[in-house]
Structures are given as C-alpha cells and as structure tokens.
Amino acid sequence: MNTKRYMIKDTNKGLLHTLDPNETGGLDSKKEAEVKILQLKERLAELQDILFAQKKHALLVILQGMDSSGKDGTVKHIFSGINPQGFIVTSFKKPSLEEEAHDFLWRVHQKTPPRGYIAAFNRSHYEDVLVPRVHGNLSKEDAKRRFRYIRQFEEMLVEEGTTVIKLFLHISKEKQLEKIQERLQDPKKHWKFDASDLQERGYWDDYQKYYEDVFKESSTEQAPWFWIPANHRWYRNYLALAIVVQTLEGLELSYPKLDTPTPDISELISPRH
Amino acid sequence: MNTKRYMIKDTNKGLLHTLDPNETGGLDSKKEAEVKILQLKERLAELQDILFAQKKHALLVILQGMDSSGKDGTVKHIFSGINPQGFIVTSFKKPSLEEEAHDFLWRVHQKTPPRGYIAAFNRSHYEDVLVPRVHGNLSKEDAKRRFRYIRQFEEMLVEEGTTVIKLFLHISKEKQLEKIQERLQDPKKHWKFDASDLQERGYWDDYQKYYEDVFKESSTEQAPWFWIPANHRWYRNYLALAIVVQTLEGLELSYPKLDTPTPDISELISPRH
Image 1 (cartoon, chains in turn red, cyan):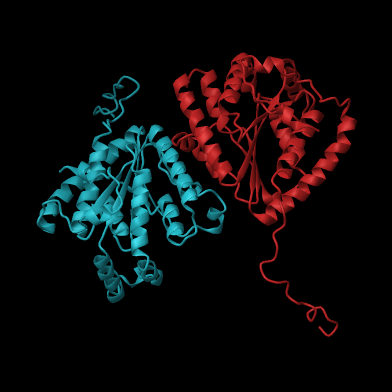
Image 2: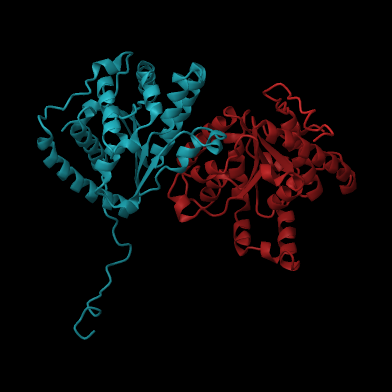
C-alpha cells in the first residue's frame, strides 16, 4: 500500500474539507484489513527488535486529532504486539502548574525516545498551538514563534537520530457525536466521557482552521504530517500501522555484529562439562 | 562597576591570550572587594525575592571553565545568601548511558528554571562541544550543528522568559597547577582531586582553542558570554556576583499587586477578637 499519498504537502486553507474521513483506501471491509493488520503487526515486532538491538535510531510517533478521534484506540491497536521494554507512550494532558512555568517544549523534550526506542505521544506540543489559539489566549505572532521552536526542535531530534512522524486522525463532526453518544451509553466507556469535550465541540470549525495552520507551519520534509481517515476504526488502525512499519523499513535497520571474533565455546558445550 | 566590558563580543583566534586572568578591575585587595560583595549579596537576596513573587522571569547562569577554575567556589559564594527555595543548581558530569542515548540538550533542558527561579549550571551543554572535540570524537561539521542547536535552544529560552548569562572562569595554566597542588596537600580538599584533571591538563591548548570557538559560535546578544578573571578568587566572586545582580536589575522586577481590592481586616484584628 502506498502510504505516501496521505502525507500532507499542500496546505491550503480549507484542506480538511477536501479530505474524506470515510475513506478506506479501496478496501471494502474490516475483514479484508484484518489479515493485513496481523502481518504488519508481526513485521513491526521484528523491526522493533532490531531497532532495540542496534540502538542507533529512535522513532517518535505523534498522535493528534479532535476529541474522540481515536488516539487512545490507535495507540492500543498498533502497539499492543510489541515489546513494552522498548516502547514509551506519554499522554499529554492539561499542563500542570510546574509545566506551565516552563517553555512549552520542556515537558515533551523529556519524553522523547532514547536511541533504540519507539515513543508515542498521545497529544503533544501541538496542543499548545491549538487550544490557546481557539480560546484567544495566543496571538498569531506568538503562535508563529512557537511554530519556529517546533520546527527547530523536531529538526534537531531528526538530525540526532530520531525519526519523527505525525499522525492526524481525521473524523467528521457527525462521527464525533456518534462516539460521544457511545461513551454515554456504554458502561465500559463511561470513564472516557468528559463534559468538556461537548464544550470544545462548539469550537469545531476553529479547531479545523488552526489544524490547517499546524500543517502549513510544521509539515516539513524531515517531520511530515500524515492525515488518517478515522471514521472507520479498522482503516484508521491499518493505515497508522502501515505508516509506522514503512517508516521503520526505511531506516535500514540491522542487528549489530559482535565486536570481537566469535569466541570458541565448543569446550563449554562439550559433553565433558 | 561596569561589567559590560567583560562581555565577549569580538571573538578572534588567540582571544584568550589577550585576556589577563590576574586582572582585578582596579581593585587592590580582597578587603576592598569584601564590602562591595556584602552589599551585592544583600541586593541579590532582595531581587530574588521579587523574582520569586512575580513569577514572570527566570534566570539561568551557566558556569564554564577549565578544571580547578573555581566553578564550585563561585556557585557557593555568590548564591549562598539567597532563598534556596527559589534556586536550583545542577552539576553536569560525564553523561550517563541514558543521557547519551538522547540528544545532548535533553538533560539540560530538564534542568532549566521555571519562571520565578534562578538556576545555575555547573558545566553544561558546552561540555559537549568541548570534550569530544579535544579528544577527536566530534567533527567540525557535527560541532557546527550542535552550535546551531545551542543558539536556537537558548534563543527559545530567552524569548520564553528566561534570561541566560554564561560565565567563563578564566585562569592561567600556572594557577591551575597551584590549585591542583592545594587539592593534594589540604586534607579538606583531597576529595576534589581527580587524577583525570592531570590528564586533561595535557590538552590545555586544545581546550583554550575550542573555548574560543565556543565564544565565536555562541556569544549572542540574547545569551552573551562573559569572561571572569579567576586567578584571584575574591575578584572572581565579586565580578560574577556583580554580573548576576546587574542582570537582574535590568529585568525591571516588581512585586505583583493584589488582584482584588485590599480587604478590610480591621475587625479581625480588633481587640474584641
């Protein structure tokens, strides 16, 4: 599958209206995707093992999207098969007082992956160029400045060995309502309901507009944004997984060789022992 | 006193040879400095109190210098009178395995001060453009890249509210030997002796050369380097303190006002209570 076409390059105003959250890339059903998902998960586990052994590269996957767009579900599905020892996931909530007293990159920098690791950000520093803009607490000029810090920060991470990919989970406004209703009706999902989500839903158009600005300012060649049609969970999972796997394939990973000549251990394993 | 003239602006090769580590800025004796030091310390404590109350600015003081140049002593002397609750000092040693697996700014970013605080770095990210260069483990090109990250990082800190000053404690090679001998002879200073200091002393000229490169690449208007003649401890302390105080004076600090009108508490303190 060609995931490249989901990379966000042209960033015109109104971009999000041209991207269909119902898209399924030609696949007809969940069933069709499931076999592919299994194969990709196996491959991901293999690649992560080499990444961890080699300790040369790191991978940072940033997940953003409107409330209920499926960030938690995506993390759960695509990374559930890998070795948790080499994986770090961080959910960035409303900043604490201590976090607010620092620059906005302070808390995210701490959670970047060391070489050998995969890290996922469930929300990220992009919240800091979205939420305060929607609510009128960040001027255009200050946002510009933050975008510059973001580009420089991500560029530094990339040059120092961390591959950065950014996934925008794209759902429709109708789908969001449906998912909020699910949360209210299903006792297993009650805990995910947050009354403030309803409030933020009122700012839907503003969020879409500022997301478009995010893509314009930060979808760089080194740290690109991908959009993920996310109305269908199964396609969302499949595509996100495929992007992660293809990104790792591109790293030319290989197990490190022994530094020393292979020692002769035949005596150790001889019957006399 | 005019501390501005210690700011490093012209950064020619051979710069350090033109700066006299024995200089005492016209002062004749330790005694003469002591009264001034006391006054400055009192003023520093006052300014820190306002900084802490206002929570608008932060100050980061980066200390660098050859082994035995007096970094520990400077921290101890200039900051011993302030409220420790608003002060953070971090000594950066040889990076741990975990630190090495991240970009070189990862560990220092974590230790930057929140608004309201003063932080001192005893050694810093500048070690990462000195030690590996001296020992041939960092190419000129990679060093250039790191300097770019440093400039961008410090610029971001400054724009986000942290004033950054960088102090280079400048001693002579003879003075270093004298201080190493002190450490060997005085039982109270034995613990400070490190055999590797003697080894690094062999690279004196290389360190001086790469320090000059540090100044050239990173003495910016926003985050300037100051050189501190450090052969005389008392002048070193006096000058470093004066630079810190003058920097804080430049911030136009003020205590925050009450948000609400002053409540009438006369009843609470009336004799009837």
